[in-house]
Structures are given as C-alpha cells and as structure tokens.
Image (cartoon, rainbow, N blue to C red; front, side, top):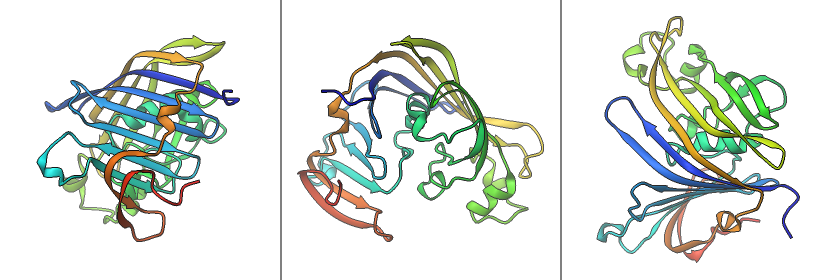
Length: 265
C-alpha cells in the first residue's frame, strides 16, 4: 500500500557556467511523506551515479565511481549528515530539489531566511542566512524564488573582512533566482514542467550595483507519476564504499560493503 503522500518525477537537468563548461544529467526524484530521494546520471552515461536520500533528519549522499584501477577496490563514496536539504553534488541537484520537493525547504509564508543550497561549500550551504522572497505554484512548489545578496552576512559566514576582498569573492555565487517556465497538472495538482535557475555574483563587494550571472541550470523533459519509486529511498550502497560521517562532530571515515551506513533509523 502506498504512503499517504507519494509522487515521482523524472527529467533532464543541464548546467552552463557561461565560460565553456556544460554538463547534463538524467534525473529521478521521489517523495514519500517526510522522505525524499534523488538520482542523477551524467549524459552520456559513463558509470557515474549520484544519489541523495533524506529521511527527514539524516541525509545520505552516495556517489558511484566509473570503473578504474585508481579507485583501489572501492566502487564509490558515501557522505552522511544531519540535515534535510541536499548537498551540492551534483551541481544541478539543488534546482531539482527546490522545484519538486520545495516543501522540505520553504517555511510557511512568502519570505524568510533560507540556506544557500547553490553554494558548493558544505559549511556554507546549510547555514540559513539568505533573505529570500517567493511565490508558490502550489504548496511547497515555488513558481518564483529570489534569494537576495547582503554583503555583510556573506562576509560573516565566509569569515571574510568586510572590505577589500572583492577580487577574491567576485565569482562567488552570492544571490540566486529560481523560477518555473511552464507548468503541468497531475491529479489536480500543479507542478513545474520546466524550471530554471541563475546564480549571480555581485559586481561590487557591497552589493550596491548590478549582479553578474555566474551559471545557469535548466530542468526540462519533466514527467510525473503519482506513485513512489522505492528504489530511490534505498540507502544500501551496492559494493564497497568509504563513508564520510559528519553526524558526530569531527567526521569519521569507515568502509561499508553492500550495506547502509550504521546508525540510521
């Protein structure tokens, strides 16, 4: 019997840094009440897979390597953290999450402080300090989400001096815009059919003039099903992996073989 609240999404997500680097992925996402799971496969497929699964309080991120003698018998790496939002792995993951599982990210209302999921550093992207505004297509699914730039807060989080650091921080993506492009309907509910994201860096370190686009992500070819994809919630790593576990303060490293990291509910 399916859970009370379950659906699955599939599609493609592409990344462009406006400097010659581009990447594309097939993705799948599933939601089951307080659980969510995502899988990303690079295009063209090369054996690498990125999986993130959350049970409401623990995030398990699994990366499967392509076959290589350099992996020393390991098939991948697993990260475990106490958080309910995704990490920046792969680079398109946060956009898929916000578009289709935003109920795990957005507080009630139309504005508030949000963690900067697009920032690649783990110590930054889970700190809720970005003043944001949003408008919803449906509960938990933002039609428009704008994260503002406040220079002094970025400097504080990044432990930077308030002035004189512009040259080092110019390409730090310090503000963001998520928005739906088209919509679709599933069982009477509205979902994005295409979704877009742009990350910006400020042209000045005080944030007082026009921001410069740093990269963009597009989510397209979306299909939806009102069912749960149980495979995407399986936290068992298939093979041998090194686990980096951040749940107990200083991180621990250990190996698992055809198993999930210990200590999960």
